[in-house]
Length: 107
Ligand code: FES
Image (cartoon, rainbow, N blue to C red; front, side, top):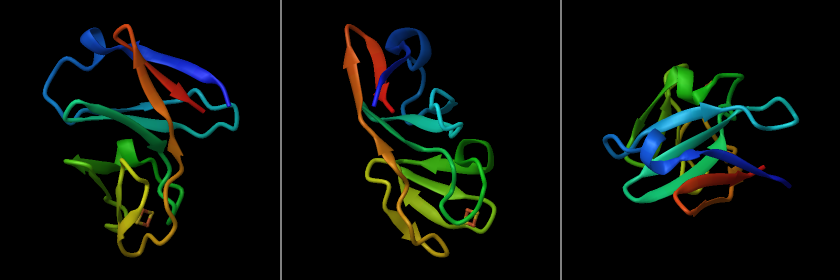
C-alpha cells in the first residue's frame, strides 16, 4: 500500500460540501473516487461492483450515497457497503488522511 497525494483541501475541495472526483493513482489501473462528505474525506473504488462502470462518470452522489445510473444500484461511499440492488458486493475502501491541508489516499 502506498500513499498518494490527491490535492490541497483549500484549492480542490473548497466549494460546496459533498464534492467528489475520480482519481487514477492505482497501479492496477483501477480509478478511485475521493469524496468530501461534510468535513470528512473518504475514498472508494470508482468501479461499480455490478458492472464495469465508473461511478464518478456514470453515477450521482447524494450525501454519502452514490447511485450508479447504469442499473440504479447504490453504495455508501464512506463504508463501501451496497445499499440498493442489484449491487451486492461492497466497494473497496481506501484510507484517507489530511495532513497540513493536503489530502492523501492509501492505495
Ligand atoms: S453496473 Fe452499476 S448497478 Fe449495474
